[in-house]
Image (cartoon, rainbow, N blue to C red; front, side):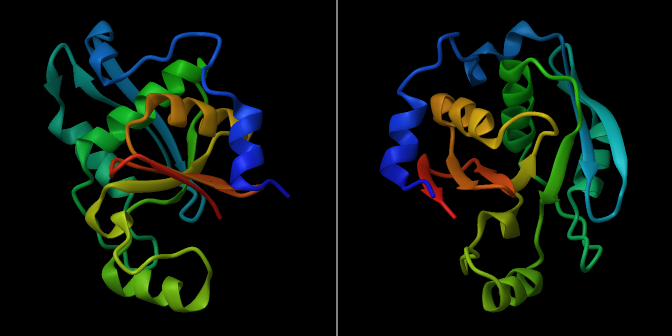
Length: 176
């Protein structure tokens, strides 16, 4: 079992290849996300940004797939979260769907999970559309964590063998 200290030591401070950041988003004339919701079995490919404009219909599709699968509630996810996921896929040079474990969580869902599972906080960023739990098939979770930490754009939680938590809150790291 990794401790936080041994895990960070294993990662090292920097990736060999420079990491793309929010400032590099202008390099891409289009931003597309492929997402597979593991609970609803739905998959989408949404080009949510083209030549300087966010596309409402495509953004709405992302809101929908990120919905609380327990209540069906759709919530406006912060666009920066989509941009963070886009940057991670670009840095990892992958074209496979992001497997969504948890996107938006209605407050009652979050409270239920907080009482029945470990690692769920009361004021979760999931409840305000600023967090995602996910994994990428065939990509070690450690690689996702490494890229996310090097981006330094928000919180990163590592849940070995399960998923990575990413959010656009203050930069921090934990092992769940």
